[in-house]
Length: 602
Ligand code: F6R
Image 1: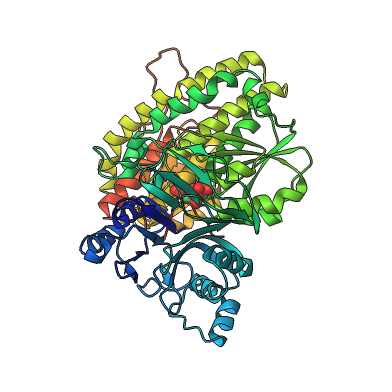
Image 2: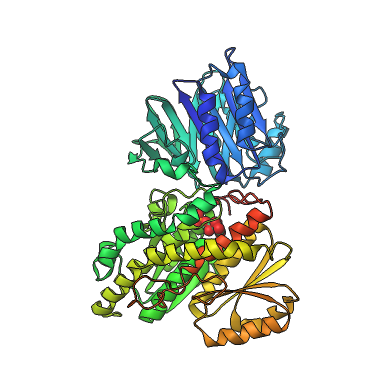
């Protein structure tokens, strides 16, 4: 939610800011803007409610920017205030001395705004963040920038990642609390960004700001935490792969990331499968034994967690519960619960606040995330990286598969360690997992062939129904979520048996009904009920299905699919269906409307 960047660079900063904002656009794309200091030491801001590309064109045409070497930038996902240039960041104080960018929510903005207005400040936007610029202004009369920012954040409630630019001195100060921020320096200069991928081309190492940090961005960074000088946080290597951020031969990141899944699966299995066939992987995490499991997450990550919980239940009889992170305050954890928190970004506010709510229960926390250095990674008792590589498309695809396989590996190992699974059976399950890359490749090939012609008959449909049974249900749910996000069409997902208890009323002549799986006899009855009402059934299953994506194998002795994992390869068919339909409808598949990746507000 909102991406921020700042730089003090050896070459003109404008191009750095624009390039970084382009890579942060997945965090929000309602508006974008930058602020720098021109030759006459005056504040210069450029803002647009178009995309970062437009900002880049304006920056290239602004000669006053050609020599500016320090500045801040922002790409917005609107929370407070409409999408307008007036509400676009950076925001400034009354006299144009201070410019700020902010990611997060200032919960007490109304009270601060009233106080500032009463004190004679002129606030010009509807945005909560603007109060930050004016608070810094009030303190600058008596303090340096670093102290002024500290005094300012002491007044804030809520969450923030902030960078403040002082036009008069060229000073830059960053602060973080419950919103991500990294800092790095290299021969290109000093940088601050919401996400390392934004600046990965220019730096090899970075530091993560902890909650309460206020840091001066300068060659000798002054680092303070809640008012106390501290050593700079540990240096971490930047592991972003260069290819992750470029489209290559693909028309969009969604298609690239769907296609990458067999390779991602190989990578996950290389990392985790060896220790999975015995207790080693589980033991390496040094977590206490558990009797039950709860999975915590949102959206696609929650679906991956539900699939993992299903494996623990089916294979090891482990009682399990799923917790929607934003509802965690109502959840009750039994003693002996292992809490598996899933988040590709590791920065999702609902997940972090969910952990806060569940903390008193004392459960040990295993994080499965694509960002080990994230707030979730730092907070959990043990972390497993899901090795998906950077996911740029706002809708999750390869991270789902990576999380599920990471969870499947640890589930098998944990069940052996707890005496719930025979090591011989664990060997067999681990060999099964090694077939997943091939199953995904075959599913991809089948989906590429069979989905586009089916989509032609779906473009006029107002709503969709997704059905599955048992282990397939969670994949049907994931398919419906993807379709909603990418196409902006309604999609309902149900266990097929529930159809007759209500959702069947939605089915009329031509209603597309997507059925995941063909191994359960009872599905036939649900399909017949749909067809009797004129519904248009598309079945994802084995060789005879409309989308024959399940259970292909070049190994004649292998049992089709991995029943204990559910039809996991169906996910590529479901993702392909959502993407193809979205493209046919002219949607922006990488940046669906109203959404952002990395949802750092509750
Ligand atoms: C769906 C999607 C979202 C995320 C959810 C959680 O395609 O991308 O539903 O899965 O916002 O995000 P993370 O995994 O970053 O916690």
